[in-house]
Length: 296
Image (cartoon, rainbow, N blue to C red; front, side, top):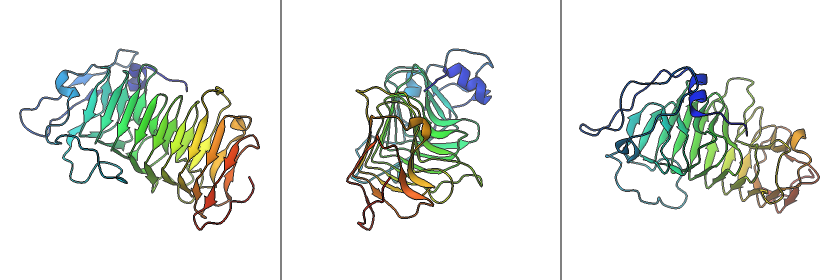
């Protein structure tokens, strides 16, 4: 995918001030009044205090199997939009209003809620310098593009709900596993997809993606770029809704690096469960009631 730097993205969304507020007295998590110019500029580096977990969240414990989103009872610290430019930063236990821009490698976002207020294109976005692992987090609200976007990100045990546009956009080397995307809140007539695959080497596995009625797809593949050693795999998901629940558009129709296998489809698509290229490998998929899928 074509990326932009942190400064350019901040300028594009017109963000003027970022404020980080601690949930408890005596915990300094960043400096108030950090200003972003309206031209290209380096992103703002976190201080060590801003990198550490929210003090009220407690030690991280891997949640029970089947858990998605912020675990019940987790105490979160409120924050405005964050720009992360420190490699290896771990953000744990934040309640972000706006978005998180990842401008450094090997960042972790964990046990956090990101709520879109219309001020950011994405809830979590990677610049060309960024990569991130997202765990046990919830994304909801108004994002102009998608809850998560661009290259080099992975997400597991996420809940994405009530978003106004796409759920996630998978760029180069991105993946989503063991997560739930459901109950969209788009404007009437808006095209939205649960998962939009744009790069190479995407993995979509063991998720539940229910787009609901209307335009769009639970999973849509687009684009013609790809590497023979970077195959898309869409495996073991429960998928429902949309025009076609799983759709490969004309631009992506010549790809030979896509495998769609072992998925379960609800019978609630307006036009059909899937429409893909003859070159795409499609095996062992079925309807939720056990019935076979019709031809592609």
